[in-house]
Amino acid sequence: MVQVKTRDAVIYQLLVAIFLFFVLIAIVIPFWRVVVTAFTPLDIYTRHGVPFFLSPLDWTPTAFKQLLGHPLFPRAMLNSIIITLSGTALSLILTVPLAYGLSTRTLPGRRIILFLILFTFLFNPGLVPVYLLVTNLKLSDNFLAIILPPAVSVYNTLVMMSFFESLPDELKEAARLDGANELQVLWYVILPLSRPILLTIGLFYAVHFWNEFFTPILYLNDKDLMPLPVLLRNILISASFNEYVEFNAFSSTSVESLKSAGVLLTMLPMLMVYPWIQRYFTKGTLVGGVKE
Image 1 (tube, one colour):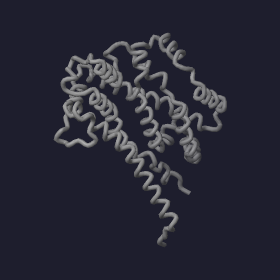
Image 2 (cartoon, helix red, strand yellow; image 1 turned 90 degrees about the vertical axis):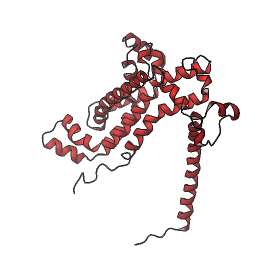
Image 3 (cartoon, helix red, strand yellow; image 1 turned 90 degrees about the horizontal axis):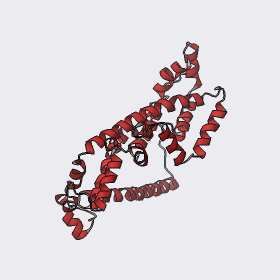
Image 4 (cartoon, helix red, strand yellow; image 1 turned 135 degrees about the vertical axis):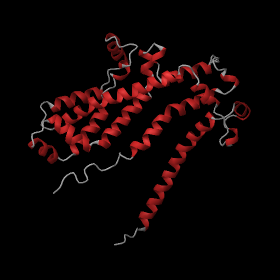
């Protein structure tokens, strides 16, 4: 049977399309401006400012070359990768069993545990107690100072708990009747059905650790442990105060080009990962999982 769209439905879809078009324009224009600024030659920038549309013939990768050519850049990139991968792995290892346990309504003390978790979510202890705790544990100049404090996110835990609660109890009961304990139920039944939520929460954690900026400044004094965002911040501050003399920045590119190139370099890895994970966000996980 052919479904005939009413006039109101057509008008509604048209208005939604127009609204989304303007949203897209509002997102694309600033992003394009950053791209153009990053590739703008110094002579064009000093004479005309940042041109909104730039001919490809005038593009230059000088800003990227100067950032990538910094002697600490490879080490900073490696540090960011280590922090992101290890932090994401540890966060998932801690979040998954916690969320699964809280999704079990028969768990003894479930309400008390939920209350304590929500209490930490509503009432943040603040920077000073966390700093004193990290320093007293002798974690300064250690990647654990960056990884451990935010290892478990209350929001991510609650989202994953809700997902686990939506899974059919019949699957869990069938595994228990076959003699599986709770750890086996989680590993062999729940996790194979939870790939979308694992990738989604994993992406949230990865973006957080990759963009971690303030915490490394507090706890990491060794320049060999410096992650990429902190290195780019130091380069841009030096350039802004006309102290960036290692590559003679001001004779070859502008400070604004360096800033824009730094923004693109930090967001590029997440832009490469996101399209691969995005397809799992709304993918059905229980198709054919339960037979009537």
